[in-house]
Length: 265
Image (cartoon, rainbow, N blue to C red; front, side, top):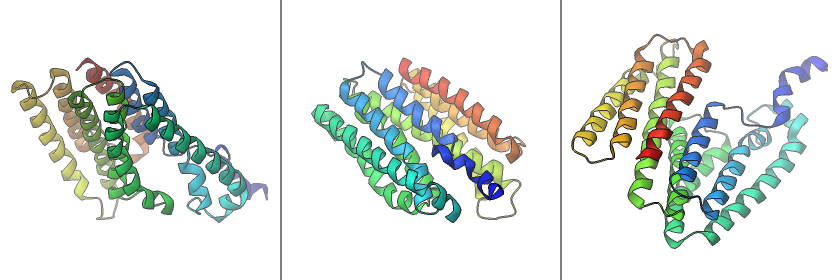
C-alpha cells in the first residue's frame, strides 16, 4: 500500500503542477497593479484570478485527469477546496465589478469572454491543446485591462501592456513546443520548429517599426523586440527538453524585464 501512495504524494498539496503558468498569472497581475495606483477593484481582480488559478489542480483531481487512484485519495479534499475557491473567486470577482468604474466593467468583458471560451476545456481537463493554451494566454493577458482601467490608466496604455504580454507568452509557449518537437517522433508539433522563429522575426520587425515610426512607446517597442529575439534564440538553440526547467527560469528573467519596460512605457 505504501508503494501505491508514494507516487501520488505530490497531489496532497493540490497546488497547480504547471509551474510555467505561475509566471503567466503573476506578471500580468503585477503589471495591472503597478501601471497606476491600484484600486480596490484591481485588488479584488487579483484575488479572483488567483482563486480560479488555484482551482485547476483540485478540479483536475476530481475529473480524473490525475488518475483514478488520485481521485480516491484526494477527492474529498479536492471537492472541499474547489467549493471554497469557487466562492472566493466569484465573491471577489463580484466585488471587483461592484467597486469598479464603468470603463473598468467594460474592460472586464474581455477577460470574462476569454474565461467563458476556456471553461469547457478547463472542466474537461483538455488544457494541453494549442487552442486551449492560446485561450489561457489571452485570458491571463487580459487581466491587465480591467485592473489598469479601473485604476485610472488610459485605454491605450492598458491595451499595449495586455497585448505585449499576449505576444510574449505566445512566443514563449511556441518556443517550448519547438524545443520538445526537436526530440519527438510525433509530427504533430514539428511545425513549431519553423513557426516559432518566423513569429519571432515578425515580432522583432513590428517592434522595430513601432519604435522608428513612434507608433508605440519606446519601452513597449523594446519589449516586443526582445520577445521576438528570445523566441528566435530559444527555438533555434539546441536545448534538450530535460533542461526545460532552466528555460523556465530564463522565461522568468525575460518576463521581469518585460514588466519593467511596460511600467516605464
